[in-house]
Image (cartoon, rainbow, N blue to C red; front, side):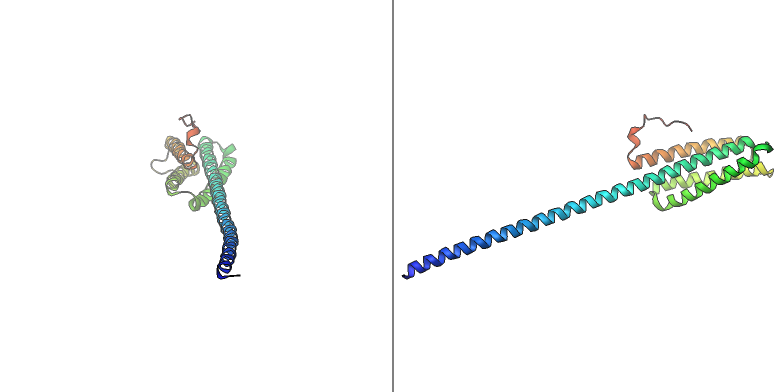
Length: 188
């Protein structure tokens, strides 16, 4: 074998080795790219699942807050109607106390979960519900202050239904459900 044959054979072997190494590296790089792609897909799916879970928890909190506020307002209305009727006073007072306690519990949870714009509306509603509650209780106990009157309680209750509607619209908008409205909120 002369030098040219050796160089040719060596070149052929070298080309074959480079080809095999290239094929192996190509497979390795393809596998790594596929692994990265799968990892990104899993991370994306995990983030999407977390967003859905968060939205569902927020929705549950909103439903509880809306329900508790409605029950509290209904109990305040019942208490107003029961003023001076001793026969139903105990039952109505108990229902009002339970509705108020339930609202406070739900509101306390909402304070930790809901966005600031909804929390501001919920805070206003909560404060004003307390004002109306104070008036109706003082009237019920015969210890009315200046300004405490059934008409003032009725006006306060009506104002709180309106606050609740505004808060509910904001909660629905936050959840992306505001587009399903006919554009008109129903009364309580």
